[in-house]
Image (tube, rainbow over all chains, first blue to last red; front, side, top):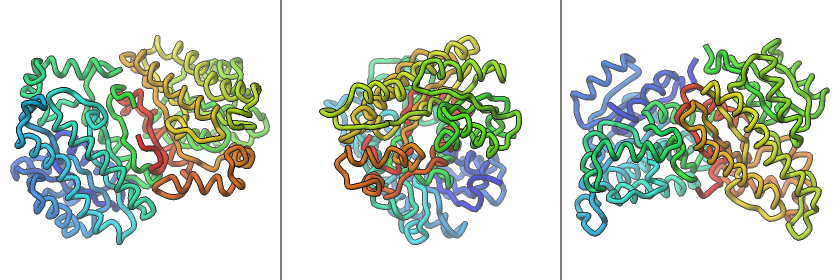
Length: 259
Length: 260
């Protein structure tokens, strides 16, 4: 008997990294899970690895596109009959640079990838959750949603914006059985970190390893976080026991953020 | 197989309300638990209700005194051979008042009960946990650990203080397998709130206990008080091995009250 028996979750960017850890944590508690990603091949691989049979499903889509965001939510309802939990997890940034040199394209891309996708999916999901008077929206923000590092102002601004959206939305639906929270993980060596970290590090005047060391040294635990750290908190928020937690920006950062 | 099999916990103020819900949740996950309270009779009643046999014990003592807090930690280690999870949960106010009218006696009581108790318990527990390079310390703070309501200055001040203590301690032991976190509940109708709420309402300029509850409820997005079970679920998470990388966190359980 799991804490999420009978629940249906959709996770943006769920084939690897944090989203995948959320998917596995939800599956372990009995939920049915839709994971999303751009690549059909990675989706098929994720399903094979999770080995959850009919309880897991993949919907391809680019979370930088509104149509794909909305199709993920609707596709989840179509496939499993409902949507109870939405994890807005996709995100990242490219083109790291100081504000004085930041391009419009890099800023726009980060806002679409992190913030707009969260808004699009949330709006669509609320259309299903409000009538059923039950829902959990879990936004994967970042320690950078509370703090600010040089050369990643686009990422920092987008994650702060997600936190603002979280607070406002939580108040709007607070009496409707729907909670809206943001998780703020410290640095984790995900695929996105591996692909975009070196560029960000260079813009900060660091090597990639140097960047990881900076993050680790800022934390009390002196090491990076892991995707499973986020999965366990997401599972708690998704459960019935999480009903009294909303509008929260929960730090999962090994003791980095001051608040 | 529970998430806390083989773990030993102690909880200040654990016979009723939040502490009791933590105890029940820990027991359900396989831990052994020592609960504390001032009243021997309530302690025995608690043990009878929990019905956990040798897995639960009671330690009588006033959590606003150093002897009792340190005694609880020592008793737990003596009884079960180790201490893995130390919940510093007791706290409250007695006859609170606005700053201009606050008595020295009340102020000192709140400092001892809400702040010193946490320090005494944390220090004693860490002395046991550091050599073992393993442990979980969690403090029941409050939404008032980030905010500040009129009429409860000592409570707000001490709950802010424990959050500072938690952050500093988390840094000190961050590489030693020990996490230190605060849980920040919104208003919960606990025994303490029922007992002292009417006087607190007066100190806050409200027209009664119901107004106090309603004010807190209306500040939350969920428009209701929180429940002890909601806090206990977070406590189990933080106590588990899986939460090894969550530390120095002010974990809100406040239905959307705090702005940060």
